[in-house]
Image 1 (cartoon, rainbow, N blue to C red):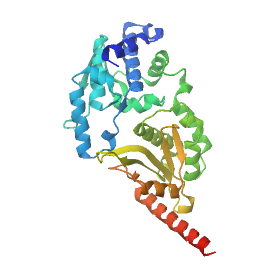
Image 2 (image 1 turned 120 degrees about the vertical axis):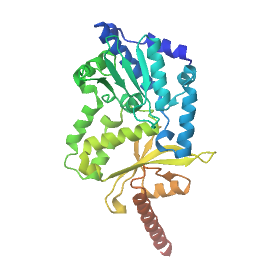
Image 3 (image 1 turned 90 degrees about the horizontal axis):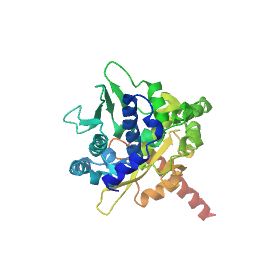
Image 4 (image 1 turned 60 degrees about the vertical axis):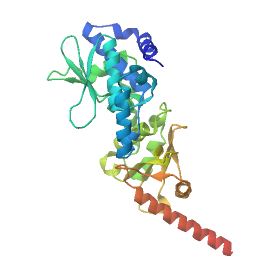
Length: 329
Protein backbone atom coordinates (compact mmCIF):
# COMPACT_ATOMS: atom_id res chain seq x y z
CA UNK A 1 0.00 0.00 0.00
CA UNK A 2 1.40 3.39 -0.98
CA UNK A 3 0.98 6.51 1.15
CA UNK A 4 -1.60 7.81 -1.33
CA UNK A 5 -3.59 4.58 -1.12
CA UNK A 6 -3.38 4.56 2.68
CA UNK A 7 -4.59 8.17 2.90
CA UNK A 8 -7.49 7.42 0.56
CA UNK A 9 -8.50 4.38 2.61
CA UNK A 10 -8.45 6.39 5.85
CA UNK A 11 -10.38 9.36 4.47
CA UNK A 12 -12.95 7.26 2.60
CA UNK A 13 -13.76 5.21 5.69
CA UNK A 14 -14.17 8.02 8.22
CA UNK A 15 -17.70 7.62 9.69
CA UNK A 16 -20.19 10.45 9.11
CA UNK A 17 -20.54 10.84 12.89
CA UNK A 18 -16.97 12.13 13.04
CA UNK A 19 -18.04 15.27 11.19
CA UNK A 20 -20.75 16.15 13.70
CA UNK A 21 -20.09 18.68 16.47
CA UNK A 22 -18.01 21.82 16.89
CA UNK A 23 -14.93 22.41 14.69
CA UNK A 24 -12.68 21.41 17.60
CA UNK A 25 -14.65 18.24 18.31
CA UNK A 26 -14.38 17.27 14.65
CA UNK A 27 -10.63 17.96 14.69
CA UNK A 28 -10.18 15.79 17.78
CA UNK A 29 -12.27 12.97 16.35
CA UNK A 30 -10.36 12.95 13.05
CA UNK A 31 -7.07 12.77 14.95
CA UNK A 32 -8.51 10.01 17.14
CA UNK A 33 -9.86 8.05 14.18
CA UNK A 34 -6.47 8.12 12.42
CA UNK A 35 -4.79 7.09 15.69
CA UNK A 36 -7.03 4.03 15.94
CA UNK A 37 -6.81 3.07 12.26
CA UNK A 38 -3.02 3.22 12.23
CA UNK A 39 -3.04 1.18 15.43
CA UNK A 40 -5.08 -1.49 13.67
CA UNK A 41 -2.93 -1.45 10.52
CA UNK A 42 0.51 -1.48 12.12
CA UNK A 43 2.43 -3.46 14.73
CA UNK A 44 5.53 -2.64 16.74
CA UNK A 45 8.56 -4.74 15.84
CA UNK A 46 8.97 -7.23 18.70
CA UNK A 47 12.75 -7.01 18.37
CA UNK A 48 12.51 -3.56 19.98
CA UNK A 49 11.14 -5.21 23.13
CA UNK A 50 13.04 -8.48 23.17
CA UNK A 51 16.09 -8.16 20.92
CA UNK A 52 19.65 -7.83 22.18
CA UNK A 53 21.46 -4.48 22.06
CA UNK A 54 22.89 -5.02 18.58
CA UNK A 55 19.52 -6.04 17.13
CA UNK A 56 17.66 -3.14 18.76
CA UNK A 57 20.23 -0.65 17.43
CA UNK A 58 19.90 -2.05 13.90
CA UNK A 59 16.07 -1.90 14.00
CA UNK A 60 16.08 1.67 15.36
CA UNK A 61 18.57 2.89 12.76
CA UNK A 62 16.51 1.33 9.98
CA UNK A 63 13.36 3.00 11.30
CA UNK A 64 15.10 6.38 11.18
CA UNK A 65 15.91 5.83 7.52
CA UNK A 66 12.38 4.59 6.81
CA UNK A 67 10.89 7.69 8.44
CA UNK A 68 12.25 9.86 5.64
CA UNK A 69 9.83 8.25 3.18
CA UNK A 70 6.13 7.96 4.04
CA UNK A 71 5.66 5.39 1.27
CA UNK A 72 8.04 3.07 3.10
CA UNK A 73 6.13 3.60 6.37
CA UNK A 74 2.80 2.99 4.64
CA UNK A 75 4.08 -0.24 3.09
CA UNK A 76 5.70 -1.74 6.19
CA UNK A 77 3.51 -3.44 8.78
CA UNK A 78 6.05 -3.62 11.62
CA UNK A 79 7.32 -0.24 12.81
CA UNK A 80 9.03 1.27 15.87
CA UNK A 81 8.06 4.19 18.10
CA UNK A 82 10.13 6.38 15.76
CA UNK A 83 8.49 5.31 12.52
CA UNK A 84 4.93 5.09 13.89
CA UNK A 85 5.22 8.60 15.38
CA UNK A 86 6.52 9.97 12.09
CA UNK A 87 3.77 8.23 10.14
CA UNK A 88 1.04 9.58 12.44
CA UNK A 89 2.49 13.09 12.18
CA UNK A 90 2.60 12.96 8.38
CA UNK A 91 -0.96 11.65 8.02
CA UNK A 92 -2.40 14.31 10.36
CA UNK A 93 -0.40 17.08 8.70
CA UNK A 94 -1.79 16.03 5.32
CA UNK A 95 -5.29 16.22 6.82
CA UNK A 96 -4.64 19.78 8.01
CA UNK A 97 -4.05 18.94 11.68
CA UNK A 98 -0.87 20.22 13.29
CA UNK A 99 1.16 17.37 14.74
CA UNK A 100 4.82 16.98 15.60
CA UNK A 101 7.07 14.28 17.02
CA UNK A 102 8.63 14.79 20.46
CA UNK A 103 11.34 13.13 22.53
CA UNK A 104 10.81 13.76 26.24
CA UNK A 105 13.80 12.02 27.79
CA UNK A 106 17.00 12.36 25.75
CA UNK A 107 19.17 10.37 25.16
CA UNK A 108 16.24 7.89 25.08
CA UNK A 109 15.29 7.51 21.42
CA UNK A 110 11.57 7.03 22.12
CA UNK A 111 9.25 9.31 20.11
CA UNK A 112 5.64 10.31 20.75
CA UNK A 113 3.41 12.98 19.22
CA UNK A 114 1.89 16.27 20.27
CA UNK A 115 -1.17 17.53 18.41
CA UNK A 116 -1.91 21.26 18.50
CA UNK A 117 -5.55 21.99 17.82
CA UNK A 118 -6.59 25.16 16.01
CA UNK A 119 -7.82 26.46 19.38
CA UNK A 120 -4.28 26.15 20.73
CA UNK A 121 -5.11 23.29 23.06
CA UNK A 122 -2.78 20.32 22.89
CA UNK A 123 -3.07 16.53 22.94
CA UNK A 124 -0.37 14.00 23.79
CA UNK A 125 -0.53 10.92 21.55
CA UNK A 126 1.61 7.84 22.31
CA UNK A 127 0.51 5.46 19.59
CA UNK A 128 3.19 2.83 20.17
CA UNK A 129 2.00 2.40 23.76
CA UNK A 130 -1.66 2.22 22.72
CA UNK A 131 -1.40 -0.22 19.80
CA UNK A 132 -1.96 -3.16 22.13
CA UNK A 133 -5.04 -1.45 23.63
CA UNK A 134 -6.43 -0.63 20.19
CA UNK A 135 -6.12 -4.16 18.86
CA UNK A 136 -7.83 -5.63 21.92
CA UNK A 137 -10.50 -2.92 22.25
CA UNK A 138 -9.33 -1.68 25.62
CA UNK A 139 -9.60 1.89 26.80
CA UNK A 140 -6.88 4.16 25.45
CA UNK A 141 -4.19 5.22 27.88
CA UNK A 142 -2.01 7.51 25.79
CA UNK A 143 -4.34 9.90 23.95
CA UNK A 144 -4.64 12.61 26.58
CA UNK A 145 -5.06 16.35 27.01
CA UNK A 146 -1.98 18.42 27.87
CA UNK A 147 -2.30 21.20 30.42
CA UNK A 148 -4.41 21.99 33.44
CA UNK A 149 -7.70 21.77 31.58
CA UNK A 150 -8.53 18.10 31.00
CA UNK A 151 -10.83 18.38 27.99
CA UNK A 152 -10.43 14.66 27.30
CA UNK A 153 -11.69 13.16 30.54
CA UNK A 154 -12.56 9.46 30.44
CA UNK A 155 -16.26 9.94 29.72
CA UNK A 156 -15.58 12.49 26.97
CA UNK A 157 -12.97 10.28 25.30
CA UNK A 158 -15.31 7.29 25.59
CA UNK A 159 -18.02 9.28 23.79
CA UNK A 160 -15.60 10.18 21.00
CA UNK A 161 -14.52 6.55 20.72
CA UNK A 162 -18.14 5.58 20.17
CA UNK A 163 -18.53 8.25 17.50
CA UNK A 164 -15.48 7.06 15.56
CA UNK A 165 -16.77 3.49 15.68
CA UNK A 166 -14.24 2.02 18.09
CA UNK A 167 -16.90 0.72 20.51
CA UNK A 168 -20.70 0.68 20.61
CA UNK A 169 -21.07 1.57 24.30
CA UNK A 170 -19.20 1.56 27.60
CA UNK A 171 -19.82 -2.15 28.08
CA UNK A 172 -17.93 -2.89 24.86
CA UNK A 173 -14.55 -2.02 26.37
CA UNK A 174 -12.73 -5.25 27.08
CA UNK A 175 -11.79 -4.17 30.61
CA UNK A 176 -15.47 -4.36 31.55
CA UNK A 177 -15.68 -7.90 30.24
CA UNK A 178 -12.55 -8.89 32.15
CA UNK A 179 -14.08 -7.44 35.31
CA UNK A 180 -16.84 -10.03 34.91
CA UNK A 181 -14.17 -12.75 34.99
CA UNK A 182 -12.62 -11.12 38.05
CA UNK A 183 -15.72 -11.88 40.09
CA UNK A 184 -15.71 -15.52 38.93
CA UNK A 185 -12.10 -16.17 40.00
CA UNK A 186 -12.10 -14.08 43.17
CA UNK A 187 -11.57 -16.99 45.59
CA UNK A 188 -9.62 -19.35 43.34
CA UNK A 189 -6.00 -20.39 43.69
CA UNK A 190 -3.69 -18.77 41.07
CA UNK A 191 -3.44 -21.97 38.98
CA UNK A 192 -7.22 -22.40 38.73
CA UNK A 193 -7.83 -18.69 38.21
CA UNK A 194 -5.27 -18.58 35.39
CA UNK A 195 -7.03 -21.48 33.64
CA UNK A 196 -10.35 -19.60 33.77
CA UNK A 197 -8.85 -16.34 32.48
CA UNK A 198 -6.92 -17.72 29.50
CA UNK A 199 -9.81 -20.00 28.56
CA UNK A 200 -12.61 -17.45 28.75
CA UNK A 201 -14.43 -16.07 25.73
CA UNK A 202 -14.24 -12.57 27.19
CA UNK A 203 -10.45 -12.66 26.98
CA UNK A 204 -9.61 -14.29 23.67
CA UNK A 205 -12.60 -13.91 21.35
CA UNK A 206 -12.33 -11.27 18.66
CA UNK A 207 -8.57 -10.73 18.85
CA UNK A 208 -7.18 -13.23 16.33
CA UNK A 209 -4.11 -12.09 14.43
CA UNK A 210 -2.29 -10.35 17.26
CA UNK A 211 1.46 -10.41 16.90
CA UNK A 212 3.23 -12.32 19.63
CA UNK A 213 4.45 -9.22 21.50
CA UNK A 214 0.97 -7.66 21.37
CA UNK A 215 -0.62 -10.82 22.73
CA UNK A 216 2.07 -11.05 25.43
CA UNK A 217 1.31 -7.62 26.85
CA UNK A 218 -2.43 -8.08 26.45
CA UNK A 219 -2.51 -11.36 28.39
CA UNK A 220 -0.18 -9.98 31.03
CA UNK A 221 -2.52 -7.02 31.62
CA UNK A 222 -5.70 -9.13 31.47
CA UNK A 223 -4.38 -11.67 33.99
CA UNK A 224 -3.19 -8.94 36.33
CA UNK A 225 -6.58 -7.22 36.15
CA UNK A 226 -8.49 -10.43 36.86
CA UNK A 227 -6.26 -11.87 39.59
CA UNK A 228 -5.03 -8.78 41.43
CA UNK A 229 -1.47 -8.04 42.58
CA UNK A 230 -1.05 -10.82 45.15
CA UNK A 231 -2.08 -13.76 42.97
CA UNK A 232 -0.51 -12.19 39.88
CA UNK A 233 2.84 -12.49 41.68
CA UNK A 234 2.51 -16.29 41.32
CA UNK A 235 2.11 -16.05 37.54
CA UNK A 236 5.24 -16.31 35.41
CA UNK A 237 5.53 -15.41 31.74
CA UNK A 238 8.26 -14.89 29.17
CA UNK A 239 8.76 -14.85 25.39
CA UNK A 240 9.99 -17.95 23.57
CA UNK A 241 11.99 -17.97 20.37
CA UNK A 242 13.78 -20.02 17.75
CA UNK A 243 16.84 -18.87 15.81
CA UNK A 244 16.48 -17.79 12.18
CA UNK A 245 18.96 -18.40 9.37
CA UNK A 246 21.01 -15.41 10.58
CA UNK A 247 21.12 -16.88 14.08
CA UNK A 248 18.90 -14.09 15.40
CA UNK A 249 15.88 -14.69 17.68
CA UNK A 250 12.57 -15.20 15.91
CA UNK A 251 9.97 -14.70 18.63
CA UNK A 252 7.28 -17.23 17.85
CA UNK A 253 5.29 -17.55 21.08
CA UNK A 254 5.35 -16.92 24.83
CA UNK A 255 4.73 -19.06 27.88
CA UNK A 256 2.57 -18.43 30.95
CA UNK A 257 2.26 -20.65 34.01
CA UNK A 258 1.22 -20.46 37.66
CA UNK A 259 3.91 -21.62 40.07
CA UNK A 260 2.51 -24.31 42.36
CA UNK A 261 5.88 -25.52 43.63
CA UNK A 262 5.21 -29.03 42.30
CA UNK A 263 5.98 -30.16 38.74
CA UNK A 264 3.00 -32.54 38.85
CA UNK A 265 0.56 -29.61 39.08
CA UNK A 266 2.28 -27.17 36.72
CA UNK A 267 0.16 -26.30 33.68
CA UNK A 268 2.05 -24.20 31.12
CA UNK A 269 0.27 -22.30 28.33
CA UNK A 270 1.77 -21.29 24.99
CA UNK A 271 0.30 -18.59 22.76
CA UNK A 272 -0.87 -19.75 19.34
CA UNK A 273 -1.12 -16.95 16.79
CA UNK A 274 -2.97 -19.34 14.48
CA UNK A 275 -5.71 -19.95 17.04
CA UNK A 276 -5.50 -16.48 18.59
CA UNK A 277 -5.36 -17.78 22.15
CA UNK A 278 -3.35 -19.57 24.85
CA UNK A 279 -3.18 -23.35 24.55
CA UNK A 280 -2.21 -25.90 27.20
CA UNK A 281 1.22 -27.44 26.63
CA UNK A 282 2.42 -30.05 29.15
CA UNK A 283 5.95 -30.11 30.54
CA UNK A 284 7.01 -33.14 28.50
CA UNK A 285 5.97 -31.45 25.26
CA UNK A 286 7.83 -28.30 26.28
CA UNK A 287 10.90 -30.44 26.91
CA UNK A 288 10.68 -31.87 23.39
CA UNK A 289 10.19 -28.39 21.89
CA UNK A 290 13.24 -27.19 23.79
CA UNK A 291 15.28 -30.08 22.37
CA UNK A 292 14.07 -29.07 18.89
CA UNK A 293 15.36 -25.51 19.30
CA UNK A 294 12.78 -23.53 21.25
CA UNK A 295 14.46 -21.11 23.67
CA UNK A 296 12.77 -19.79 26.80
CA UNK A 297 13.02 -16.15 27.82
CA UNK A 298 15.13 -13.26 26.63
CA UNK A 299 16.64 -10.09 28.13
CA UNK A 300 14.57 -8.76 31.04
CA UNK A 301 11.53 -10.88 30.15
CA UNK A 302 12.84 -14.07 31.74
CA UNK A 303 10.97 -14.25 35.03
CA UNK A 304 10.21 -17.89 35.73
CA UNK A 305 12.45 -19.36 33.03
CA UNK A 306 14.70 -21.24 35.44
CA UNK A 307 11.72 -22.43 37.46
CA UNK A 308 10.04 -23.86 34.39
CA UNK A 309 13.21 -25.54 33.13
CA UNK A 310 13.61 -27.14 36.54
CA UNK A 311 10.03 -28.44 36.42
CA UNK A 312 10.61 -29.76 32.88
CA UNK A 313 13.72 -31.62 34.04
CA UNK A 314 11.78 -33.23 36.89
CA UNK A 315 8.93 -34.21 34.55
CA UNK A 316 11.35 -35.76 32.04
CA UNK A 317 13.15 -37.72 34.77
CA UNK A 318 9.81 -38.98 36.08
CA UNK A 319 8.85 -40.03 32.56
CA UNK A 320 12.13 -41.94 32.10
CA UNK A 321 11.58 -43.68 35.42
CA UNK A 322 8.06 -44.71 34.43
CA UNK A 323 9.23 -46.00 31.08
CA UNK A 324 12.07 -47.89 32.76
CA UNK A 325 9.69 -49.66 35.09
CA UNK A 326 7.37 -50.50 32.20
CA UNK A 327 10.33 -52.01 30.31
CA UNK A 328 11.34 -54.10 33.33
CA UNK A 329 7.87 -55.59 33.42
